[in-house]
Structure formats: C-alpha cells, structure tokens
Image (tube, rainbow, N blue to C red; front, top):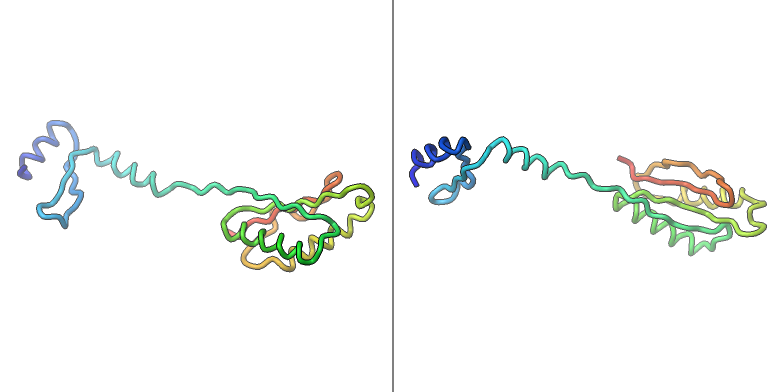
Length: 137
C-alpha cells in the first residue's frame, strides 16, 4: 500500500499511521491510536516487584554452625530483594533469660554482609523476639 493510501485510511478511521520497523524493506507501519500505544508501552515498564517477607526461626541456644546457616539464608533473601523476619521463640524457662536471645541477635547483625538496613530492631513480644531486616534501597 502506498504511503498516501495508508495515511488516508488512517484519517478515515481517526487513527494514526505509526512506523513500527523502519529498518525493514519495505518499512512496516501500523494504523493505531498512538496515544494509547505510548500509554501501553509506559505501563509495561513501570511494573513494581513485590517485596516478600521471608521468615527465619532461631532458638536462644542455637549452635554456631546452625546460626551460620541461618545468616547465609538471610543474606540470600536480602540479595534477592526480599525482607527477612528473624523470630526467636522461647520455650519453658528460657524466657527467664531474654538477654541470651539479644546476644544471638547481636551476632546475627555483626555477621550479616552486604547492603541491609534493620527495619525493626529486636523486640521482645510475649514469648518471642522479632527483628526485620530489609535490603538497602
């Protein structure tokens, strides 16, 4: 179809003639609403990634190797763009010594690597301590 005929058809339909592939021989054009086309292109590029919260459970008397494994998982979650919620549950008489739990949280924050920020500092809530770590934006 000639360019004049294509422009006439586009005007008859009250649409625009848009060149889609200028490098093709012959160039490829489409008849469409250009405003709507630009809106759709912009909409595709502005999709947000949902940030998930991954939960990691620890104990007050956790072994050294187990703690290293948990910290490695937390680092992996943060590097993946997710938040990490660290929860420490106390059972029985362990609740008498919450300072032992706080020491474990101090170890965790010291051994975390990469760019992170503590969104919620360790806080005792009933029979558990909770801390939220997020990737630095």
